[in-house]
Structure formats: C-alpha cells, structure tokens
Image (cartoon, rainbow, N blue to C red; front, side, top):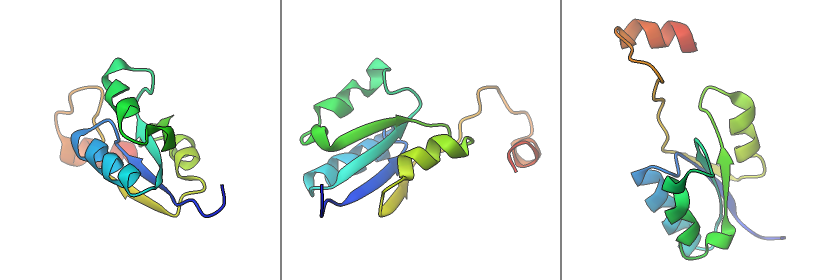
Length: 102
C-alpha cells in the first residue's frame, strides 16, 4: 500500500519489544516483528493487539543474516530490542561469545 510506514522491531516477543510494537501499531505503522518461533503460543498475545492486522511476525535468529534481512526488507527503520541468548551455558562469556560470534 502506498504511503504506509513500515518498521521492524526485533525481539517483539519480549517485554520491551511487545510494548513498542503495540505503540507503533497504535500510531498506524506496519510492524515486522521478529520472534524465535511465530507459531509458539507465547506469542499469541501479539496477534490480539489492536491493529494486529498490520503486524507480521518473522522467525529470526540474531546470528542468521538472512532471517534478519527478510524481516528488515522494505522497512524505513529498525528498533533493536532483541538480545542474544545462547542455547547453552557459557562459562566465560567475555571471551567465548566474542570468538564464536565475530
């Protein structure tokens, strides 16, 4: 639709991301929201937000460029509220995460 304002919110399933998505939807934005799994029941509340027809959820992994790229495509801005949560306990995060993910 011409003239629509589209933004991406990473971490939409989280506390800050879901409130930000709610605010943006109330202001008339189309929101591309990233979550780990769009079909997970813990994201059902997002589909009940006012103007949720303007919310599109994307399965995304912060370490996967292609999954983030598809969520960001066509957006005029990105609100990055997601954070990396390793799947296993990291004993020395200051060294391990930097070496592994950079």
